Image (cartoon, rainbow, N blue to C red; front, side, top):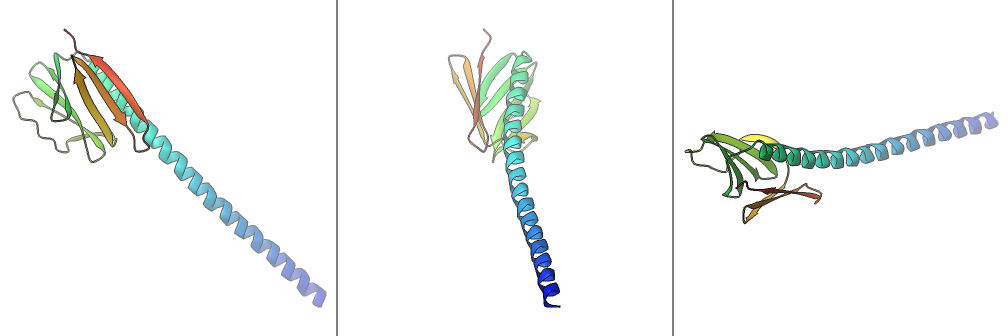
Length: 143
């Protein structure tokens, strides 16, 4: 009789350890998956913003300027502004006569770093994701 109770105790202990280690494995897997998807999303956002701005610049705008920290692309009486507020990249298109106000408009992508600099008609756009990885886009103004 006592031999049977020790066997039962051993079986239940073994089963309990199996359940415990299975739970630990699932929790570790969840953490790893969350980290991988977070890094992947940040990389995708950086790449999306880079390609979006690159395609906008290739559209052949008449003039490119920097206005209030925003990239301003002008064509045929319209202005398109690309700018960052609170970690989100936005775009706003309107008639060129309308004043630009830096406020949330059309969301492009989450991206905490957006810097536009100009020197002698050469624009450098620096994009940075939340992990600090950055991409630079250089565009020369057409003469």
